[in-house]
Image 1: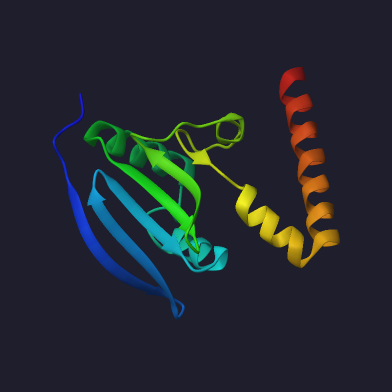
Image 2: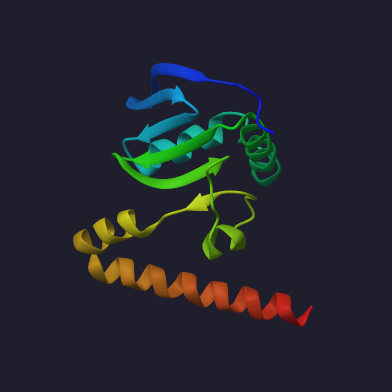
Length: 140
């Protein structure tokens, strides 16, 4: 049963000169990133810097227990969710971060419009790597 916890916040954090907006609206915490680079820098500099999978599992459990959903957005478009409202799909279950719901389609579409050949090559390489990893893990 979730604890009666409410998060009310309106913060702005600067990472390498890029502003990251953080808002709490009761049972939802929204982190709006200006770029993927800012998100990567944020993750590599805080408590997530070491043992990311284990730390993510702990954060998910704490958020779920308290009834709070944390939502990560990229320029206003949701790309991930963790906590009480997260519903991990197939991609979220393949990643080593338990409980994370990943929505990569909007950023991929934007990248595809800007650099179609590079994006398609990257997606093909990732699919080949994923296929190899699944094949390898099924043999073990």
